[in-house]
Image (tube, rainbow, N blue to C red; front, top):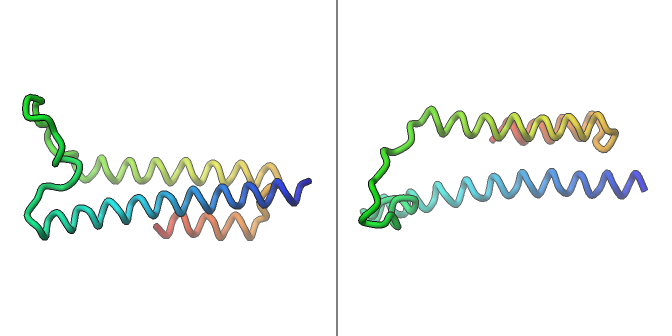
Length: 101
């Protein structure tokens, strides 16, 4: 049973990390393609005309969101290691993946 739980937890961590990276790459590509074609980025493309347009978020806010997400992932990894689900080597590898983003 502990081996099964460890496998499930490892899969969840890897899948969550892969999803976060995939979403980030997709957003970057969509922004680059829109910039090449002269269209606004996808986040701004579908704003209703009657709605007031909010200023673009500052780069600091994006960096804070990214840092907050990384801290949460590291906390989850730490909890999994403390619970005996991840070994120290597995924890270090996953930590490297989260921080290497």
